[in-house]
Image (cartoon, rainbow, N blue to C red; front, side, top):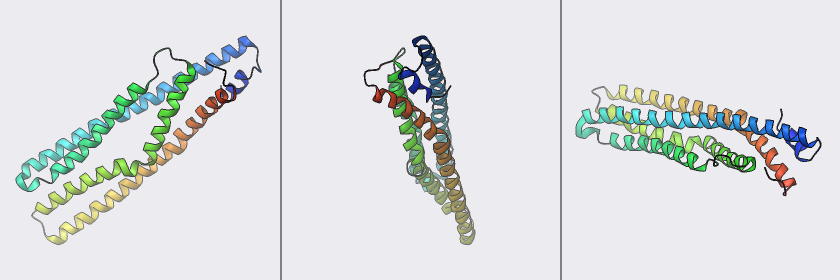
Length: 208
């Protein structure tokens, strides 16, 4: 069943009984895919929040062992915890944005469309809101540890250069993966929902 068949259903190209059956099938498909996307977002938010807390705990432990010299690591910990808090807030926001049980298909489609638009923006801008704080925290942590390490200055510069290379490669990979998800997953899904919404625009008197 293709979402484009919705147009034929709403334009009355089939008999009433068949149209109702096809509409019910489309609604079941929408519900299944909506739940799938919701589960993906849920586990992403939970895993990212938990990972942030774990990384912050490790950083805090290292900074504590360094004593007063490790105070800059506190800033790195705050940056990582800020990211974790963002994902927790996303969970709360997504929960509040859900349609009420038994809501009409039209309302559910509109809410899902708005949610996926937000996810599109987040994944498209991941370099700013995600990589920025993450690499800032990693840079502060690495610079503080290297600064206190009993090693030759040349060796410290070499390690710093390697760290920058790793950061750059990791950042490129994360941006590439997210852009691929946007292109192959989110944008096709948004087009499907836009096709559904267009039918209501064409027939403003319809409701589901």
